[in-house]
Length: 249
Image (tube, rainbow, N blue to C red):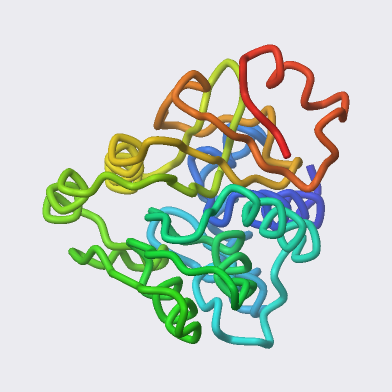
């Protein structure tokens, strides 16, 4: 496989999943880890990705407040945010994580909505703080670099004391067979705690992330109530998810 083709795949995977690992990419493309590391180094030097230990992350994911970095599939994420507001009632308690889709939602809060948001994302908290009608509570702990999320046992313990009406989760990968999955062990543990602390759970995912899986499973589809994508509910790609019992808007 040519270098340009490999780098195109790396950029596409980062756009979809925000973060990639050299070991996973080397298996997908049947090349050595060193080859992938060199490709990532070149992409980082060209200002297209941020190189991290063992892989890379997208620039808009690592620095979401930097307006020069384009958000991948931003219009689709705005559509998902608009749908999500139909689930949020006045005076409800909402749990959120971070990620570019959740940030788009945080930017679009209706001025008529009154709610309390608990979040493990400092960036989501700062964005929500612009809305005087929203009470914002950060669930703090160790800040995970390059994901900008609070993780660790203190976060999990705090979440255990909350009972929210709705949990909003972004998705790095989601499928009927594999459920919701991610790459990082600490992030997975906190997302499991978020799910346990809510009466209802909604996954917000652009359709390109459907039918994909990553290394560590967060939960099965049976633990998710709503799947919100930019697509109409009757779309063919969503049929297996309907059959699995998920609800759509």
